[in-house]
Length: 207
Image 1 (cartoon, helix red, strand yellow):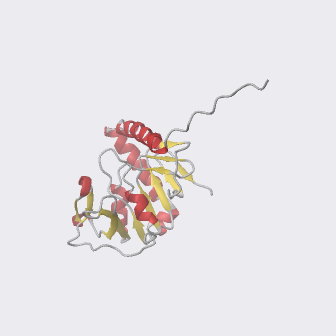
Image 2 (cartoon, helix red, strand yellow):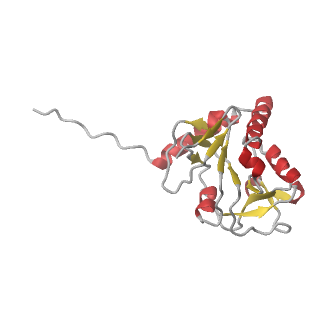
Image 3 (cartoon, one colour):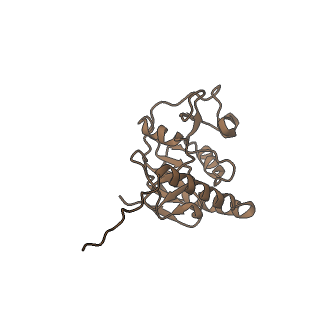
């Protein structure tokens, strides 16, 4: 008589798995503070600054770090010092989950925007049109070694990149090493990064 077998348990819901991972990764990231946060942030940024793609870039899409995110000030200052065209994201008023990009020529044109994140001031920085920046530096709550990114859950960057108006030549995930995991749940619309940079390594993603 063939032994009866029970069906396998249902796979956890993707959204629930992402929410649990998001909480854990944010807890780990918040635990990096003070001198360690500054030291790791500098090390990761210096690794990115040393990449040939960064040094050769004429147009860069980056972001302003807030709260416990890995700092990006060295990246912004390097772009401004070398005259690289720097695009920064900006939330579109009255359109939740939607961002545009604007060129920021220096720190003086930034002002606190949605979620208190520094953004290019619309009074001085019109929205950029379709663009293909040489390098796009993307934030994330976590990344995996296949290049998948776990965001904050609002879908802002997914929508921005999915529209087709912003087509980076090189997508870079920037994070602390504790945010780099072996595998993340991924959806069909996720746009994996090409390289991940942490304070301790540069991981190129092979396709």
